Length: 387
Image (cartoon, rainbow, N blue to C red):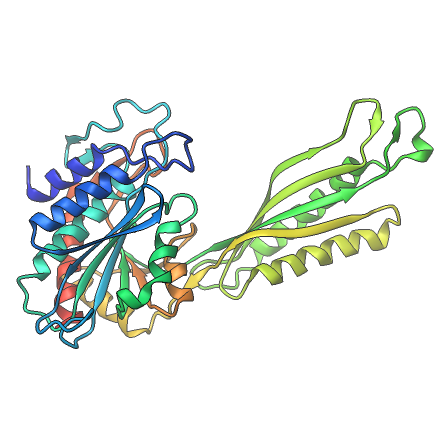
């Protein structure tokens, strides 16, 4: 086994299932200890940051030459970023026993994203021998699969790190992701009038009124997805996620609750989605005097976009293409990533990671050759960015 495949195997063998996703799960403590110990053995500067009790981020640093205070020798500094948590392992066979077969490494987290983490670790280790002006860092963060408290804690103390740019090692099949969708969670409540089922003239059925909302939301979703306004992400979307209502079978229900997830593209915000939903409810109410509903936005994560002409994007594209010997696409990702948190803090971020399959699935694997290419691209970017 190579140094890289051994490191990925070691990381996959550690149970780091997110305890917010699976109550009672192991969490990120053991893998954080492993990364910190590995960093010390490699001669790197090691910082442990508690994002939450027993849920530590680990930051590894290769300082630039003539290091002063908390920064290196005055050159530009780069942070590599990877998350240490995984989703659950229900129905998986031996999820923490890494298996290498036909150039693939199997196991929970192999693809999402312990392979990218391993490539980052080796790239930061290599940076020590490169006599760079700027610092090179790796932030191995907790909780990306649920609430992203790891990257939130990192950004909240950004004055400690002061990097000029971030590369996130999420899997992208060796292309460069420069945009991704966000999301807003919306609660809609329809209010009826409770009455006995035998007295329909006294009742207003809140569940039936919610039916009108569901029909209107479905029409809005179809119209939205037919109108692709973003070059890489297309459009936003929405779906009804959870619904509840009623008190008993012989009663007209006075309340019905619907939870909706609205996926967003750049330019859409929590406030704009709440207003958009209110317009839909107002249109229903204008045609139905018995319709009464209210809307509340409960949680949001912003979408992300960095211009394809940005210097960081073009620099990474040039380096990746030289290393791979082929054109590298600039893509958008449908799912949310921590890059949005960096973007909100004014820190440019790009995403490039390995090829594979099975993120969150029963069978998960990564192409080892692609991880080697990632490590090499990261090292090349470090040399060019932090020189």
